[in-house]
Length: 251
Ligand SMILES: Cc1ncc(COP(=O)(O)O)c(C=O)c1O
Image (cartoon, rainbow, N blue to C red):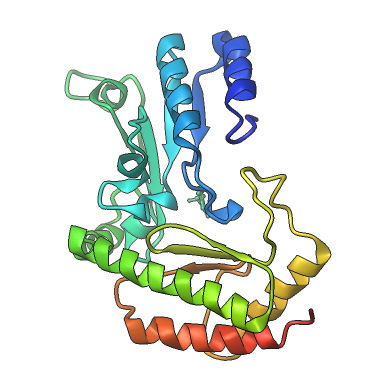
């Protein structure tokens, strides 16, 4: 377990255990952490150190791949050796995938006889999932990402405004189509710092329930995830309901 965004402790832990490490796995934009990003300094250090020590770097982009046309890795400018993908690449159907450098992926290559690593599975290359995933990927053009970024910004700005109008303390985080609302105004850079107190917890439970009863589904932890069919009208409808829901929260 590496302390997120703590450059020196992480450098020491990886260096000290380098001989036993096959890989370091990290999600560059963690959904369970209100999308607080891994800092550029942190990711650069991990990339350089893992390369130097011969340890694979794996990005979990199951969630964060939807950050941009080339995934989160292009946004942060770091290339891992392997990437885990899921969710959005299945177009709503269950899917998991992994991809990486030619060198790493060559272990699955059976063209010269037996591959070094067998990759078999009951649901591999499921035709229905592949068709849905392809349809979804075709819609996620660079223009679509730009539109989602604009919609995301509209929602983030609107949520900040709603907090002000409702007189609640809070902060709004996230990038692109990923938006997170937290009912606290303390800065946090890792999982421990962002743990909710009972009052914050109650506020998000209350808002989530209000929204569900009024036609808006968010992630129970307070995240809002946008998708291509959504329009500005959907964002404005959401904001109207959020403000009404915030007014019901006990201060
Ligand atoms: C970032 C991230 N990684 C991995 C997973 C797990 O994926 P799976 O359920 O396919 O194992 C999830 C699922 O929610 C996720 O959000």
